Image: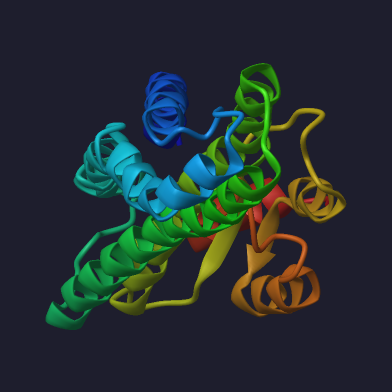
Length: 248
């Protein structure tokens, strides 16, 4: 899925800007909240205001706008899937229920991205309160914020962006398959590189699946493929399955 790859690459690039902006805003908030003061009473007095400043920093970082931009591109994934299915001789039609499923999935995507933001805010707030009680140098604080953003906020947002694209693609493929009159056959598709998990290496090695084989594979590998998996099952015709699976 070239479109999905372009979307996640663009998201990751813009996320770097968001993270840098967020770091700047958090540090500015800490300074205005007297977090670096040598006076413990002064730090503690203004500590409750740090959380509100943290939320303001997140709201002004551009994260929410970046997420909205990504989810607005779901329609581009649907268009690409239609094109690929058409090239494979497969019709694509969706029911009213399918549309409701897509809308529900987008709401779930948005909620997950919001959870990442809120989880980061809760975790960092605890650290800010600890610093307010014990004191912290500006250099140590800046390094701490950088580490939390890199290993937590940015990592989780990037991971879910990849996960959400693959899951939405699979959702669209599956909804189209529900309206297909015939046997279902699948090709396991995605990048082949050193980031592949064992389950995906196994899936790419087999590559072509009957519907029953797909169900068995997904049950056996569900936990391993739950997050950050870039591979999906793409419906193919019976003829393509038989031609490509010959001799395997």
